[in-house]
Length: 172
Image 1 (cartoon, rainbow, N blue to C red):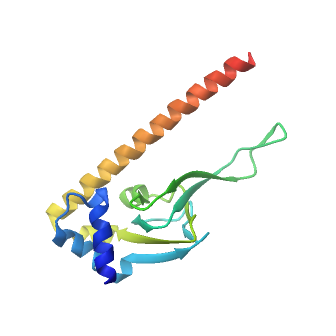
Image 2: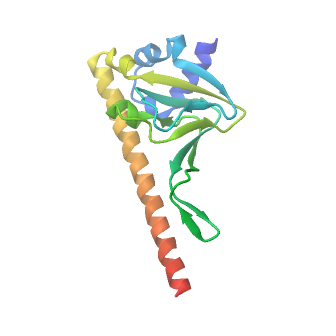
């Protein structure tokens, strides 16, 4: 019954749209690929090694990044790191894909934002064990997700640039 509800959910996730039922079944049939977390639990920390991407099945996960600049009473401190929330991920969102693909360390911390969250872990080893056509579909979806994330970041950058320019003009 649990697998039925997971299968139903996976069928609604755009990431798995192009996958056959058999391919999706191979991905979700492993019990060890699902983890349940409570509020404030850390899924991974910035700087951790990572060979796994995650799919939010239930709940919300927030991504945080440590920065080294803190403005305090008009002064800038370069010594104290600040934990800054980057985004909140809802069910259906993937995260951790950059570290999985590049074998680089995590560039953010993932922490549960809701009372609980359930995530699906997809390791590089699992993907490498899939047949070639399924691997191609998986990588295509990863490229699409990365392109979407990049487009969202570009839009945020442009919005910040406009806000910065407006703030500069209002000060002058």
